[in-house]
Amino acid sequence: MIVARTRVISIPPRPQFLRRCFRRPAPGRYYGTSVPPRPRLPRLPDLTPPQDARRGYSQQEILAELRRLILAGNLPPGTGLPLREFAQRFDVSAIPVRESLQTLIGEGLVEHRPNFGYTVTRLTASELRELYVVRERLESAALAAAVDRAGPEDHRIATESHARLERAVLDDDPAAYHRETRTFHLALTRPSGMARLVHMLEYAWNITEPVQPMVHVSAAERAVLHADHSRQLAAFLTGDATELLKATEQHHARLNTVVEGLPTDTGLFAESGDGKDI
Image (cartoon, rainbow, N blue to C red; front, side, top):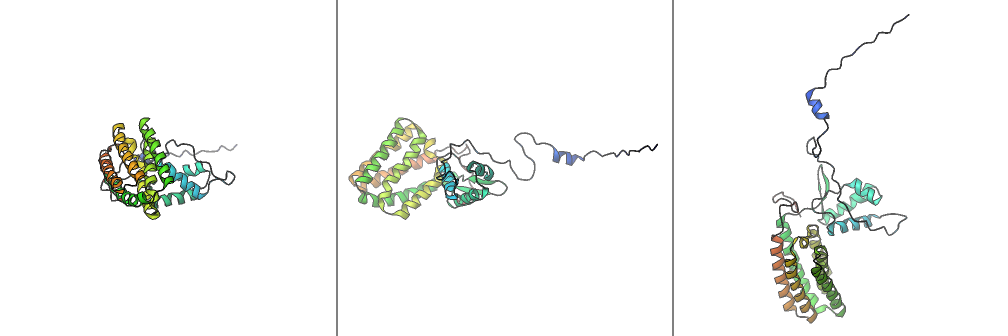
């Protein structure tokens, strides 16, 4: 009879530094060099369906939808934009999502950080104020041309836009007021016939949209700003360029005061001096 002998091997305890490496991190913490947790998307509204349900989303449709979500304030400044999660939502590979985000980087709406990924651009407070100065200059130039070129259809569009804006004020609906403010200003500037100038105005406006400035102001401030809109509309309808530009200048002076008063301690803005470009 053969008796098998077993050899007992003693495994030394894991060194202290390895125990630390393999220890499960506490909730809300992570270990390593500078790799933060994967960002999670906030709850989003339903996506716009693709034009061709059978073929699914095209790259251009993904780009348009991501841009819409950012401009509508559904993705606030600093929000992480995980490729995999967006790819799952659009039911596509990561490639068209990445291409769309790269395009949005060029538009100033998205930025990419090493070891973190894509995020919605977060401006500094001074950058936001600078963009409002840019908007004022571009808008004034467009209005000077638009007031003389506008016809009955342009007047109708501006009047209807002003009515929706007034309804937002009466309903105390900050989101609607913010949305309709842009529609109203563009209704006054598009008749200028200066497509490139209006495009630059919209480009600058887009970069400020994730902040949703008008959502953060008081109802009283919105009412005062809307009184400026009424003056602008009256001058636009009568073709009074001098009065229109004067009302616009006063309106932007008030806007600058409002923007300077936006909270800077809520994560809405990036810290100054980080060396990033708009």
